[in-house]
Image (cartoon, rainbow, N blue to C red; front, side, top):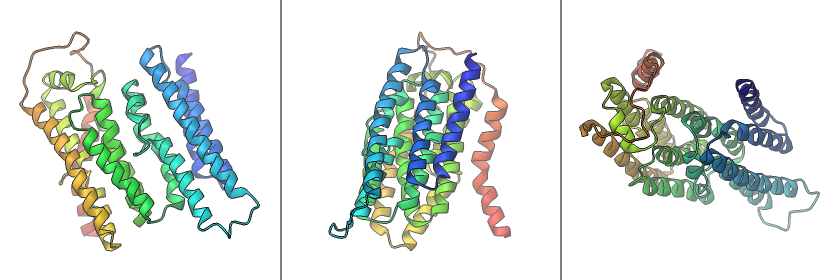
Length: 338
């Protein structure tokens, strides 16, 4: 019975995203967002107290964001002459985009996102980190344009994600701040070349799936260091995926950042590009520090709530990791052959 209702709400979750991104009107988009909210709450709900707390936090913030979006839509649909108010429509679109930014948990409206992830298991974290970003980003992409407003949002995402990830011991919160950093890159790609956003999101999703599949019952760094000593191949997969997530060549994660930087320079967005690269280096420092600790630390100390005899199917993990590590080389060869 549990599997049946999970399957039902998962299908509703997928359907709601398709409704929102294919809607002709803002009202249809809003209906899809509401179905998405109401179908995700039962999925993330479980017997754990932390998951119940996370679902309540998620519901409250999403309800506030939906109210902001609905208010801006109603004001735009008023039969009222806005000619006396300068750029009224663009201001209302900014308010709507703020509601969408709150929905996907991007800085500076990110206050709920790490706290909600902290109470979820890795399967639900994967949904929050990947699938739940599709609808808000697609809708922001429809009306985004280069301005100081969106540039400040991107810069705040870079600064907050870089600073807050330092000295972070929770892997789920670390993945949340990493997602905020990548959302800044994705939003900057929307302002220049919208097709790059799709490529960036696909690459980010592949790397995130790789990392979450390896975690299982691991939630903190000390658990990670101890568990990865059991399997050398899992340790190597984890380190290579974190390098790919940071965007270091020759891994797959470097390709979308490379394309974003190139298009931003072509559009004379030099200052924003420099700021993004500088604060992304802080995230890369955090990743490399974790990787070096994982590589060098060899300990037999075990937490009382850990399960070292985890049964992980290595075949899909190995295949996904091969694709993640070799895709940049394969794409480069294909482009040279064309």
